Amino acid sequence: MSKYDVVVIGSGPAGYVAAIRAAQLGLNVACLERSTNKLGKTGFGGTCLNVGCIPSKALLDSTHKFVEAQDDFAIHGIAATGLSIDIPQMIARKDQIVGQLTGGIGQLFKANGVTAIKGSGKVLAGKKVEVTDDDGKVETIEADNIIIAAGSIPIDIPPAPIDQDVIVDSTGALEFLETPKRLGVIGAGVIGLELGSVWGRLGAEVVVLEALEDFLPNVDKQIAKEAKKIFTKKQGLDIRLGARVTGSEVKDGKVTVTYADNDGEKQEVFDKLIVAVGRRPQSEGLLAGDCGVTMDERGFVYVNDYCETDAPGIYAVGDIVRGPMLAHKGSEEGVMVAERIVGQKAAMNYDTIPNVIYTHPEIAAVGQTEEQLKADGIDYKVGVFPFAASGRAMAANDTAGMVKMIAHAETDRILGCHIIGPSAADLVQQVVIAMEFGSSAEDIGLTVFGHPTLSETVKEAALAVEGHAIHIA
Ligand code: FAD
Image (cartoon, rainbow, N blue to C red; front, top):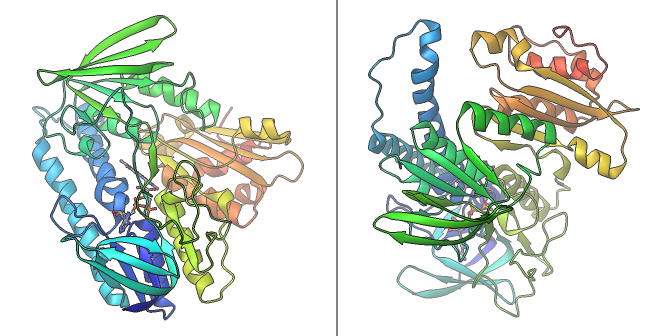
């Protein structure tokens, strides 16, 4: 029976990062991956690289360029007439990036001495892992430590069963070879808005059906309100809140969706329907009953703050455990666990995990919202700076949105930052670093920022906390 210091189950951003870090620390590591991707290769990189973060951003970038050329070039004096988009080429470019990155993980494994094993893992009692390969051959391997990083899969709902043709999940929505004329999206969350944007930019008439009454309920209310205005008024996304889908019927290549809102039952006909109502842990068949690892009723593996499960020497990281389902959160947990296995005192700061929605403008946040602070009874002050007052944003003709900085009323310590605007994902990272170092809003206000940059909006929002922003009247 082969034996390793560490066996990692799953090679997504949580698992592959854990495996590489553990190998860097001198441990003998194997990483199991059971999926085969669209290119017929082992799906190293998990959801993120194969059907998540990377392919969705590839399509968002392609379609944003198309919209820019169509709508924005003229103001710069650039004539872009007779524009067209070759969608199969756009999809092929996305696949090429996925191939490059997933192949890159295989290279990184080789370079770091991680043994990659193609097969499905199941945790057995006594820190053993049963591996079933694609031909059904079963082998058992032993490990001093096991890291479970099996990730998540899309949730499907009975009223709209996925056929990956007319009714698709997020994976199917990355593969359309032509723009649907009418596109329905169930769920106005991150994935629904991103994928709705991709196809909306190429001319699809997009209707988003969201069961909740609030738009982006976890986003700061002021930012969510601005986002809704931009998406509906400027980009023409038809977002219907309080719309509960109750049924669907596929006929002649179209789908009729029935939903109920406060006015009663309604129907809409779409060429494609994307179901984007969330993701659930991929934990079926993962744990033998006597292995000592426990799960909650939804299939999330129970862990403490250090990602230790109830079984000594067995850890779980990424989407399969509590916390936001984000690639970077899983990766950091993977690093923490690998370092703790060799006795280091690594810990994770769950208060400074950035969150991004890659629409245009992007929406990015770190820390607490005004609503959360109010609910917790914490006194705070707010500084807001609009991109419309940024010279760099004007130069780029990209002035929608704002930066909102929130600091503690007495200590001035930064409690949160919420951005909607150009490059919000990169801008918020500056505040993540500041928060990680316990900065005050004044610390950012006192820092020299290059001019002209979009980053200056972060400094101005920090100055605005005390009413000192320079470039607003
Ligand atoms: P996964 O990436 O799901 O990887 C788990 C891997 O384990 C899979 O490859 C699976 O095949 C394998 N596996 C499962 N069970 C077994 C087993 N028993 N044996 C062997 N292998 C197994 N997050 C962001 O941070 N930024 C984004 O921009 C972003 N965009 C997204 C866009 C879309 C469309 C989607 C769907 C997701 C997006 N996410 C994004 C979320 C992100 O992809 C996940 O949070 C991340 O991939 C989770 O990483 P993970 O390693 O925990 O799990």
